[in-house]
Image (cartoon, rainbow, N blue to C red):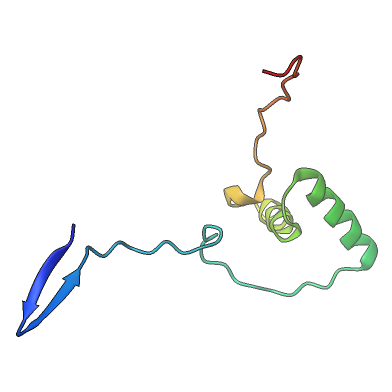
Length: 93
């Protein structure tokens, strides 16, 4: 909807303001960044486990630490369920 406002001799066009969507991923909420230095052989094992689950290494470590201390980690720290199967294509449509 566009409305016209007349100010003196000048016509000003206005339109409803829609909230802007921010680009990028959704926020993971309030978090505190830390730096952890792991021995290379431990990092490689952790990174491989995270890749196998399809989650970022930092999210995997968040889950491991949370569970080790009796907490449930945020949902983004767990692998996404994939219930999709590949469908066979017998012929082109």
